[in-house]
Image 1 (tube, helix red, strand yellow):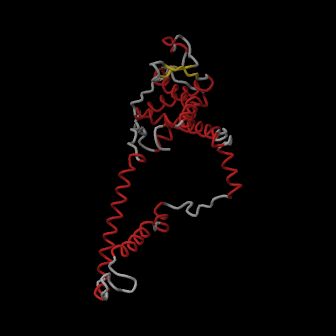
Image 2 (cartoon, helix red, strand yellow):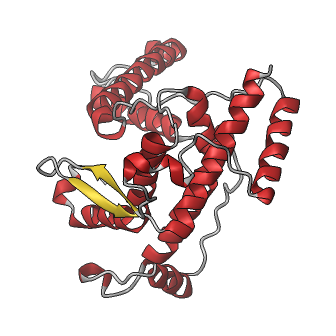
Image 3 (tube, helix red, strand yellow):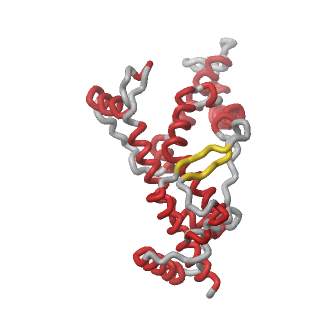
Length: 283
């Protein structure tokens, strides 16, 4: 979709739903890890550990949201049908589209179907010959004289014409890319770099096995903000909510983090961080 999302209420609603259903909770959880459980967001190893421990769970939440969202009816042009309804009704009415290029690489598709440039050049050559009036179908030039000399030089003129048309085609493509580039190729957003802290596969496998044993044995390390005596500065209790900053009048937004879900994930983070630090320190 092109243009500012502030003029598209469907996009705005989608982002609100993403935030309220799962994204804000994850954001609040990461703030909690940073405030209470020793997460350093500037540490590449810590970012790698976040990916390793929680990326599958985040993707699972995204997929669950997608399934729920596709079941919502769309008013107006959607005639109160959900995306799932439209998809299956479209298959019933029009059949299932068979993609002949399914599983092909872009190079293979361009090789066997990429005739757009050749066709464009052929049409330009046909239109160019008639517009210039250099010769007619009977081989006579526009001034009425026999076109024998013209026919003799056909091969050379065709080569130069093809080169000229090739330049025109490339110029058109470059102009189109330049004019539309701002719409389809936005400046990339800088992404924090994550780095695997383990130097070899054996070290990583040892870390995985130690983490599995810690999870099964409910072994929680001290000093990572998970015990009662470590909550004094937070009011002496592990609160089931966290605050995230917003741009709305500088107010913080209170996000509920159910204890049975997010405390368990905080334990997982502490166990992973403790074992990662030990494994990399002992090397």
